[in-house]
Image 1 (cartoon, rainbow, N blue to C red):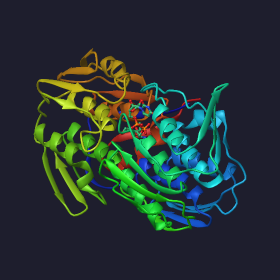
Image 2: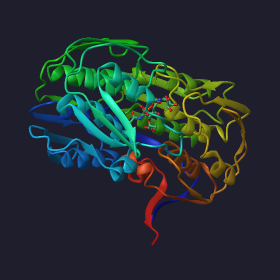
Image 3: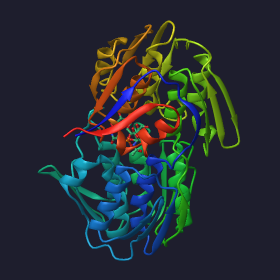
Image 4: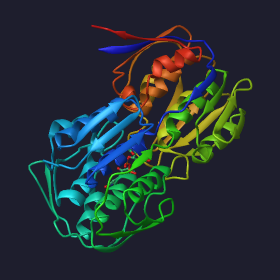
Length: 419
Ligand code: EPZ
């Protein structure tokens, strides 16, 4: 099993170029299935979740060539409509393929994606949207069997602004005759990126980024070129790494408008934060201050994906921080490992109370999910002594060359193969 070995105490200082967004790339790669042609996707992050999506697209009949962050996807001949249980377990974001397969082939068969370590992750909102478009869905034997050869535009209101359900509905609606209106939909930048890509392929979508999206469906889609937007969560993670270790960092190729809520909270901890064009500069100025209130919520509110790195950072802040998680019911699970390292954290319902301590101690800890694992890595950088992070496959799903990048910024970290 591979692990990270970290000797803590070094400051994160230097410059970093943000990679392409995992959460933009995954739905866009799935959406390439809708096109009867070739798509060129550039600036795709080189992470295992993208590798998993590439494997699934190949199993569905796509031809794929990849050269570093550029992917050419030829989806002229789709030969299957089924996503296996193995693939669904490998990556639950395979659920995005449902809308794309229905839009392209009129059918899709997936295993129930099931939950993960951060929550039960139901897909009822996805299925509600697809049924509104005329998809017949049968759920049995742990399978979701979808049939919908003649989709019709519809008005679809989401009970919760689900990112994935919004994206699945957008993809399927491109093939639904007539007008579809999505309301109370997610407003994340990755939704806008998907609209950009689909319109480049000949779709007629407007409103992404607001809570109402209009799709004029029924037109065949062709191939297109698209550059993946910067990853706002990867960017935020490196900014927090510098803040948490008393360092300073200049991040390039960032889209600072996507990080407004994150930068605001970093300022409240006492960091110097400057942004200009595609660069963001953060410098820690002495011991960080605690945050009276940090509440996660749908974009543009503070992103749930940054909750774990912030809790790690606040473990050494001066004072008591209150962090409320409103999106995933189990996203504090990594804190038990942080407590092992000496953090003072109390969980009350969906609020974590973090009392800043003087130091964290290196320990052997296990990553249980992507962002929790990144948070434990930051804690290892902050701690005295050596920390070993196990189960790093969770982390490498979403961070490209994570240990190498941290090393280049001054961290004493290496990847070990502990057989
Ligand atoms: C996307 O997940 C992201 N993943 C997540 O990032 C991110 O945390 C999440 O959006 C929220 O921003 C990708 O884009 C690949 P949701 P998604 O549907 O689409 C409930 C990371 O670390 N819900 O917006 O699955 C759900 O249980 C990952 O990069 C239903 O109840 O999130 C959750 O409580 C983690 N029924 C809430 O909505 C549904 O049908 C938000 O989920 C769908 C969702």
